Image (cartoon, rainbow, N blue to C red):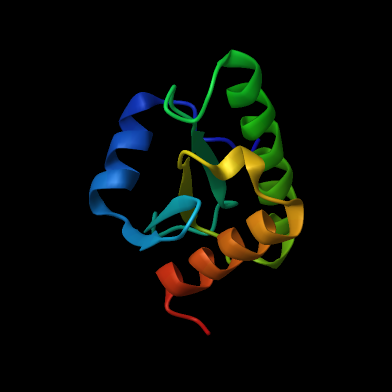
Length: 109
């Protein structure tokens, strides 16, 4: 399972992780120091939209994470926080922004 589920893990990743601010999302990446698979977590607040919009946005973010996971290094926790306006963005823009944010927050370009 490649999900961050505990609130403590969310907090520590956001507090100690490297941050990459994007136009429609914020990406936080923290290294765990082991070789276990990378875990993803998503934050979609009420500022993004109503319940239907938030759940659709969360599904889109999970799909992006699922596509990026095989090409991403192990031993990291990644949090993606959706910003208001992100539900209107096309899939290719959202995917590209998050991919770019992951590269920027890990220092590999």
